[in-house]
Amino acid sequence: MNAHQWTETLRVGDGFRLDDVDAESTPGYHGHKADGARDLAEGLVALNDLQERLFAESRTGTATDAVLLVLQAMDSAGKGGIVRHVVGGVDPQGVSLAAFKAPTDEERAHDFLWRIEKRLPEPGFIGVFDRSHYEDVLIGRVRALAPPEEIERRYDAINAFEADAAASGIRIVKVMLHISPEEQKSRLMERLERPDKHWKYNPGDVDERLVWPEYMRAYQTVFERTSTEIAPWHVVPANRKWYARLAVQELLLAALEDIDPQWPVADFDVEVEKKRLAAS
Amino acid sequence: MNAHQWTETLRVGDGFRLDDVDAESTPGYHGHKADGARDLAEGLVALNDLQERLFAESRTGTATDAVLLVLQAMDSAGKGGIVRHVVGGVDPQGVSLAAFKAPTDEERAHDFLWRIEKRLPEPGFIGVFDRSHYEDVLIGRVRALAPPEEIERRYDAINAFEADAAASGIRIVKVMLHISPEEQKSRLMERLERPDKHWKYNPGDVDERLVWPEYMRAYQTVFERTSTEIAPWHVVPANRKWYARLAVQELLLAALEDIDPQWPVADFDVEVEKKRLAAS
Image (cartoon, rainbow over all chains, first blue to last red; front, side):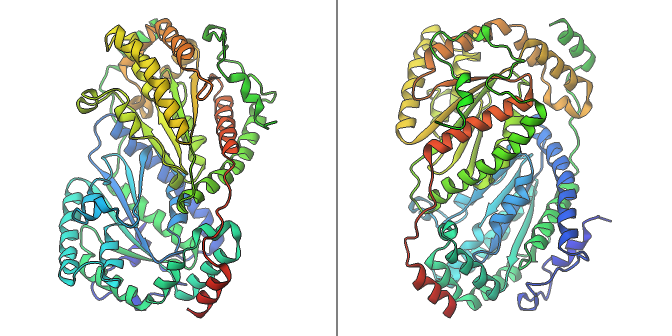
């Protein structure tokens, strides 16, 4: 039994309904904010140890596995905070971070997965997608950026793509950070009230708020079509930032423990090298 | 006058001789290890603030400048520790890290700067090169990996390349971490003695140790040929890790203060947006 089993409750399974998730809640976790901060700090020690072992395998050419954290959310839900406070706690040498913005003209000329595939993590790395190929069935669907039959095609294409990635050794951890529209309003208002936060605000954020129910329906469809055995979705209530960070850390820990990376065995004769070094 | 002027003493100027640098020393800094740890933690707060402003400019499309930290050193001198403990303290979203290994066949088929240019930081980012184009005039020279006339050509090519990068807004901070051969021996021996450190050891490390004086001569030539006004070298004594980390942090702070990034001014009407948001 896995120590991180409490995050199992966040996993999207049959019959999941996004509407039923309370963004204020802290499912599976029985502590409060102070406990969460303590557990996050403790988890970071474990995360660092596992990440270093995984990275060590990459340096000796023995790594076969990688982790990919896919982060999706409405604006201001806390993706940046996850990158900063969860991923930011491990050695940057072993992390590959890709932030996907609106596609460029070159990217648009290719299949929607073209730019994604190029950013998959190498063996031994923890990859993070800050937004991802799911934008192409989220904003893509809500804003009708592609014909309906193309949107429809993409769900299966995503499943096939992720199955290939998983078969190559990538543990895919898909997370939707779920905030309530009221919480988003309060966070966006804070950005407007602080000149040092204006850069984080975009008038388009309010445009997207106005179609919040359409986004929730698009997410619901994403969960129904792409929460697979091999790459399940997790919906993380995110009104409480401390909870969301802890939950994502636990999901990463579970993925790394599943890989169970080991310190590489020396491919040289340690005693011979000690003598060579001593004589040098 | 810049608060970080103490690192000026590390700058390679006319008449510099690497042989004269004591790897144990802590030039320009009058504190001890505990002071260094405290100052590093304080510096991190300032570094984060500056980095966030710089990154904010990148998000609003107003960034014109970037920072590039070039790290060169003999094995085990502490490049990884700089990445981890100095660069690792800032938001990973604003950092682009490139670790240059021995070139691939594809890279070898191009000019030595081809793979380097592709990894220059975008405006608003702090780029870090863990090894760099200087390998092509260091191991390249010591191991005669290219004809002498090609090695000779590269110094001017590097200066021209860096002048272009600087003209495009990149502040180039070039650092050689300088350890003594005795310190290296002790660090490599520790790697051999600990099974969880074996992955960091490579028998080739001892081969390179055996030509230490040749490497020091190659570095001396690098300093003489490529420590320019626009992209000067800094030699950081690195036997004391705490000092090296503090010095590199100070150099980064000086570069960022020189850029003096400002919170972007809103390109929307804040009061109008508050009303739109409130009504949404």
